[in-house]
Length: 284
Image 1 (tube, one colour):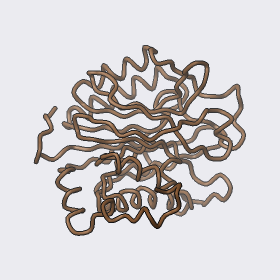
Image 2 (image 1 turned 60 degrees about the horizontal axis):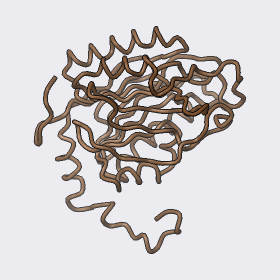
Image 3 (image 1 turned 135 degrees about the vertical axis):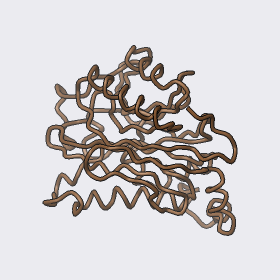
Image 4 (image 1 turned 60 degrees about the vertical axis):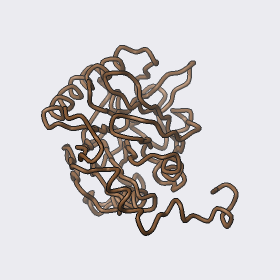
């Protein structure tokens, strides 16, 4: 593993892959992905939402008997991912159980422990029947720099990424279990409306905040949902630097994040040039 230093590019990787209900099997798969990333000298690895235990099989009417397994803070499965990470920074998703309440959650870890946590705030369709909502977007410091996390539908809302950027995050890890449209399916995923929106949000959130977005997503089918894949790394100008398509894979690129963010903001600095006095109070 390379030691990130100022002026040295970071190796950023976003995973597209299928993760189902079998947590033990998912851990084996994660171990293989992490080992492959280690051989490639990856500094930051972002895995999809619901890496451990999978997502909901029905987004509109989730069956209480078919919910993903929930893991408490001290679950050995979570400790296993921490141990796997070693010097690498790894983001992954799971269903968190806290005081009897379930959350769609993500951790950012290294072998030293938890670097950052996020509970999904915005809930689409019937997701509120399966999970409680989080209530904050929090940036945190890591070996690869200051960053934050969003979980799939969170990135639909500009305020989510903007809050992280205003808190100093230069990297946003987006962990998704983002399916094709459940109401108006296209014959082919690239023509699906949700496929277009998934890519649009990744690029827009990066460009409007002049940050780097590392976006992972589930692939394959779970219940009635068909996931899009389309993992990618997006630069602070909104340009896609690396991507996968609908099948599993890793989008990987080298980038001097701080230098590129600084360069993007050299003339037009979107955060500094905001006019909060003209916005609605809730947008400030």
